[in-house]
Amino acid sequence: MTDFRIFETEQFQKDLKQIARSGLPKLVSKLYEYVYPQLRSNPVTGSNIKRLKGPYSDMWRYRIGAWRFFYKIDEKQRIVSMIAASHRSSAY
Image (cartoon, rainbow, N blue to C red):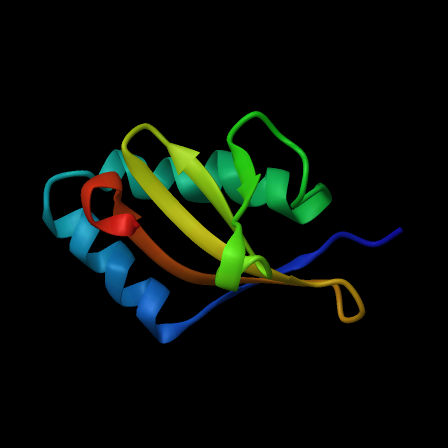
C-alpha cells in the first residue's frame, strides 16, 4: 500500500508562519520531521491523533503540547489535507 501524500492549505501555511513568528520554530520542524512521516504511513492511529465529533466528524486532529493540527483524509486519493493549526486556547 502506498503512503499518503500531505497537502497544506493556504490557511494552514498561514497558521504555521504565525507559529514560527511567535518564537516556536521547533514546533514547525517537529511537524515536518516527526508528524508528517507518521501521517504519511498511518493518519488515523496514534496517541496524539483523535477524530473530531459532531459537525466536524470528517476531520482529525494531531496534538503537540498545547497546539492542535487539524486535517482531513481522502482515502481514495490517499491525501492528508492539513487544514488549520491553532493553540488549544483558541482551537475549539
